[in-house]
Length: 230
Image 1: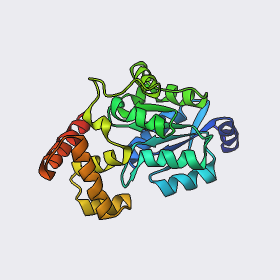
Image 2 (image 1 turned 90 degrees about the horizontal axis):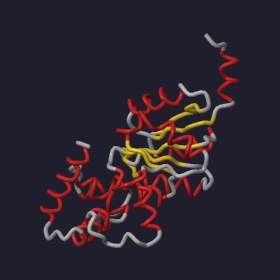
Image 3 (image 1 turned 30 degrees about the horizontal axis):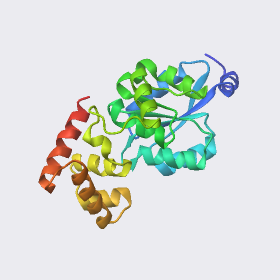
């Protein structure tokens, strides 16, 4: 067994990772993977926006991994908040959602990489090291798509999903509708007015070419169900 003093000294030489996820099993799994490495170590965890900001100030991590789908908050909004407060801190986004839906949004929000939870066990260490080195981590397919988009070549090509037309906040509302949340619940969760949520619902219907609220709810339920099976 390594003496505590020697172990602490060893940890001082390792790059510090802050894990942001509201699922304890995921946090523990990531910690187990990361802490086996000699050059990186988990310095702490958080499960919402206030905890994350406080942990960054206190622990001064070298990189933050952020779950896109936090329980009562948007991971995309958290990424934007972190980049505003700590512009030099690299962020790696993790998500249960397919890469094509959220990767570009995460990069635009300020993340330096995106990895799905399905592939995290195999590639998260590589992703963390790449982000720590100042490089972008995406799959080759997504790198090409994001590059085309940033160069203005994305447009409204044939391969674009209707969901891609939604803004980040509209996607938050759409996702919560798919989880069975009502307008009032969504307003409380996102700290917005009911009127604002109703406006978002109208915009979503227009962008998805949906005429009724019942059709919107059905579409959202079906979409959320597909996401859960990925």
